[in-house]
Image (tube, rainbow, N blue to C red; front, side):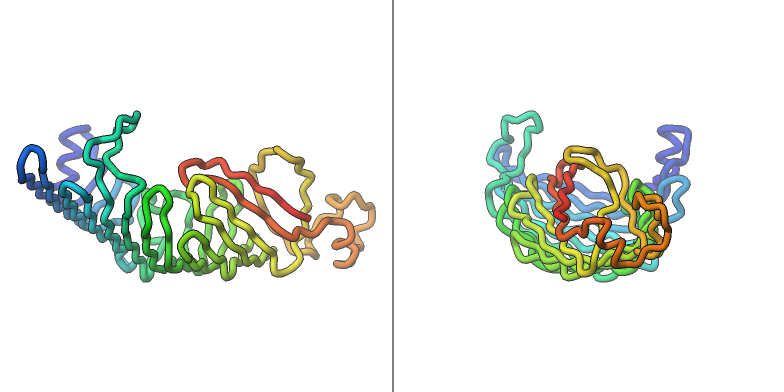
Length: 287
């Protein structure tokens, strides 16, 4: 199927382009149906986005499991590979979502992304937050969907983000996942001439109550006047010798680094708490 022609026929606009091939098979008895589906997409792109992706998706189901295998890649970037075996309920749950997945039964999954060039991905995959960078790693999922265990690692090299309240900044870091815990080996965040270096850990025992603890490797000063419960709409870093004297309630701009350290409280710990399903996260700063 030519997706450009299909889009034009439906909307009189060429909103998408590329080619699509698919096959669907169903077999078995009425009480024990099995499904097999294969989908192939070549050079898929959205209007006004030159980045194109190609991929394939294979789906199989039986009475007890949903098996997925997928591969997607962009030109100039290694393909992202994903496979999973997810348990199914005998009958759909009587919930508002009528889910068919058994969240408390064993599930397995693997995600591999050897060398992903973020700048080459289309916007619907990287959103507008990422400008560029290299993402690599491999993750394995086990236990259950409700309380998953992750093992593996992920690394971001020269990641550059656009201005979304955090101001344009760059990041490098590496994370090791060990089931319900994650260790942040290092994270270097740069905004302008300011650099903050962290290490840390995360508690992933419950994806609805994630806790991330960041510990600075060098002095990080809190220049804000935020109070408890106040909403934070932006974060920025600045080199200690570029701090505006006006922020220090001092008349003289001549201050040494030691004087600045004495004026502003040093941050010893930053804790982020939130849920995967919710974008509202809280930030706690210990001085």
